[in-house]
Every structure is written in C-alpha cells, then in structure tokens.
Image 1 (cartoon, rainbow, N blue to C red):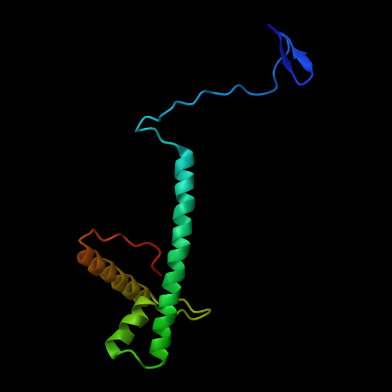
Image 2 (cartoon, rainbow, N blue to C red; image 1 turned 120 degrees about the vertical axis):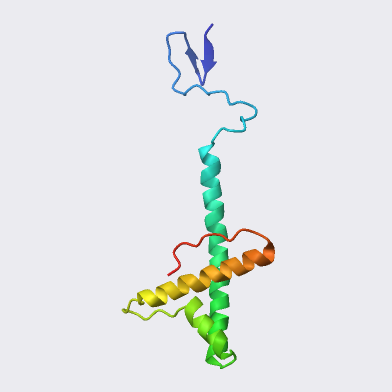
Length: 127
C-alpha cells in the first residue's frame, strides 16, 4: 500500500532516503558496555579534574605566600620545597629532586588514606 510523504507518493518501488530506526531495548543488560556512557564520564572527570586543579593551584599559591612571609617553620618549608618543588625555567630538575617529590607525595596519599580508612591511590605524573 503506497504511503504519502511530503507531496509525493511513495510506492513499493520507491526507496526511502531515511535509514530505518533500529529499535532500542527498554533496558540494557547489566554487563553491556555503552561507549557513550564512558565518553560522558570522561568529560565529567575532566571537568572535575579541572576544578580540583584550580584548588591545588590556590593552595600552592597560599603556601608559597606564607613561605615568602616567613610564616612556615623550617620543617614545613622543607616539606613545601619537596612537595611543590619550584621549577626553574630552562633547567630540568635533578633525579634526586624528582624522587624526593614522588616520595613526599606518596607519603601524603598514604597518610590521608589512613585517616580516611581507604586505600591510597597510586600517583601518576608527579613531576
């Protein structure tokens, strides 16, 4: 039976230019991987990472200001210099400085994990 579409009749020999709609199941099986969900989650995580990075920058700036105003104790200054090592333009940090930063950051993650009763996350890109 022919069906009318926008002013012209569609006959059995006329092909529709639209792709047929594939019916979607009402609910997904629990083990089905949905790429669009992972893409959206990646975008959410990137957004959250950006907000967290702003907080880290603000905190680092506050600590540097306190250090500049001699408001930190000697051991706090040493910790700050290792944890938020200042990078010098054009001069790479030594292996010892990089290793010290990694060590201090790992200790910080482990300390907070213990306080919270959680497992410490592994750190990446700690330079």
